[in-house]
Amino acid sequence: MQSLEQAIQSNQLLCAGLLASRHSVGVDTDISDCLQQLDRWARQAQIHAHISQPDHSAFLRLLTFFYQELAFTGAHDSADTCQLNLLHEVFAYRNGTPVTLAVILSHVAQRLGFNARCVNFPGHFLVRCDIVCKEDKALPDSFALSTALNQAHCHKTSDAEHKQTHSVMVDPINGHLLSVDVLKQKYFSVIEDIDNECMPKEALDPASNDEVVVHMLHQVKSSLINAKRYEHALRSIDLLIHLCPNNPYERRDRGVLLHELDCPQLAIVDYQYFIRQCPQDPAASLLAQQVKHMDITPPVMH
Image (cartoon, rainbow, N blue to C red; front, side):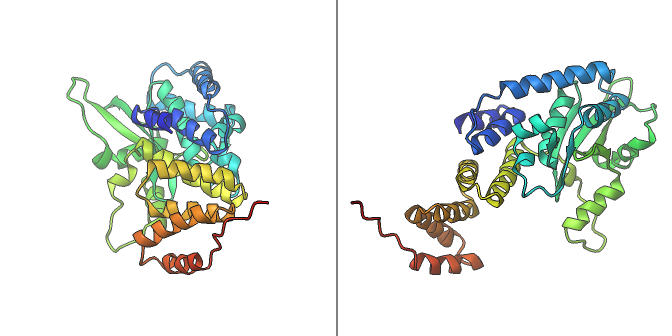
């Protein structure tokens, strides 16, 4: 857990995600093979996609290489599939969720000099790439998003060439560039639409490393629970509690798993913590009644 925290704090998101996923299923935490694989993909992209500088056309070629040559693909609903949620498995099978694919794509892009980062967009992780180009250089039609986002996300530098930074948003499931209209549609499909409300520019801000790792772990936990791999799910919840020690809902979930694993005394501790912290939650009264009837008599040893 210490190494996970160190990776997060030292801005090594890929390492942190790999450590979290491997620890969750009890796999040896040596992640060097995955890191070497990512370097190989970046070198292949540089050669086969002819990427010499991080401009807009090179980014398009990178997306084509990533989703066609490397054949990465994904699924929006993957709660029942552990393989899609475990980052080290995504390296092996090239099939993942929005967040796992966003992490890999953004890091391949970063190896090639692109300013690409993950975005925890409501309901769906995205990849944002900020591309510097000359003000008088026209962008392809597929980059119309950049022009539309100028007010919120573009700035001019003070150098003589009058450069601008254009933000491009990518769906990591398939590599499609997302227009402002599509982003707004996705945003208000999750967030309740209020009359005359605009999508806030903060919705497209890059996510912090711990935010990405916590999101991945939530998906890992859910998929492991659905697969009834409770002991592994318990490992992922322990990581979440370590990263979010004041979250009573993680303690509640751990209590449920401990109860399922026939550890009632430990489960009661977590249940009681949740009840104290969230007395108004409907689950609190149900758990309080359950605690009263739980048998915590230690087994008789013969």
